[in-house]
Image (tube, each protein chain N blue to C red):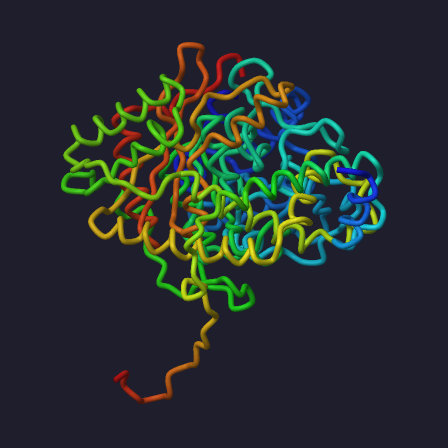
Length: 464
Length: 65
């Protein structure tokens, strides 16, 4: 079973296409594993075994008849539970939406269905993708398979945990202030926040529309590129959707980084925020690895991290409050404490401060893109610290404040988090790679070169 | 902050049903909002604001100038 548990999408797809792996057996094996391990990790808040087996039987018939749809055909996946799947509840992990049945598929769900992927269920999140790990909600928070009872990051926590625990090879998360990259960093998996507008958000419960992204989460870089390939594309009914050509994201993965210009944003983690010493060492070592592979790595300076954080926090507060104010007016007691606090934060921000935050956002975006004029990709921290015990609320809150993901929600650039080693205690360390707008292919190319050189993504949590 | 002030603040935000516990949370929100506002740069200008622009389809056959 362990062979199937941690099978990559790429390998599973190859085996299924050549008849060496049955989509039915693969799906059954993972459903069985979820059944055994979910009580420990709480990654899933709902499994869909009937849906999964029906899709697996269909995939087996189609692939057997030579009608292979592509690399996701027969591959199990799951959705963060703010993403609609027709006929299933979309709860946002909240009492408020416990009975909310989706009338239709989110665009991303429809794309996965069309690709022949196997829907396994809905994944835990922070309530409405905001707040933190909460114990006063209808479902418990997901627990990191790395370490003891540790925080897996969030808000796409179930997605990170399900991948790290070998329950599924692919998951979707969403990222407004870092919620794909945070669990990717803490669970030692790969998470991509694509360029704003590349992936449709229609059918996804919003947190802050101008900062929301849907992103692929996987256990390695190639799998991530394959998953994004299915998700990316214009949607005329998402006002933020971009109409751009979609390249082959996996085409350049073997090209290496010789001659690639990488900007190291060291001041984010060494000056603006003093990261944990082992995290600093891992990032500096990653820069050396890329240099040794032939990349040109030079330090670049962006605006201070705190400026991005100020703009992000004000915008999220205001946009989230605008979405939730009717419920806060009528059902405030139905929110968990953490989400209520975060959403109430937007009730008392002045309109002038919100406008100033938007002005600051525009300024920071201009400055950041100017700094990217001479580089292909930037390298910096995602998290500043390794994870902490999930029941230590203050430590979890501190982790949220100490990160470098928000700048790229502000600018909308693609940003990928991936493992960059482990602490002496065996907890994941991480890095973040940022590209030019719509430069996902280059980000994947650099990530793949680093992955081949280090093999961090081949490690799995002990005892799982 | 006195409870009456918090109730007034909640009412102004359209939140008439907040309990005492929720009002305590609102007070923390107000403190945090003040703190954040102080961190905004003081030289931001209206000319830096984002604008919505119309995107009309190019007339058929006409080359861009």
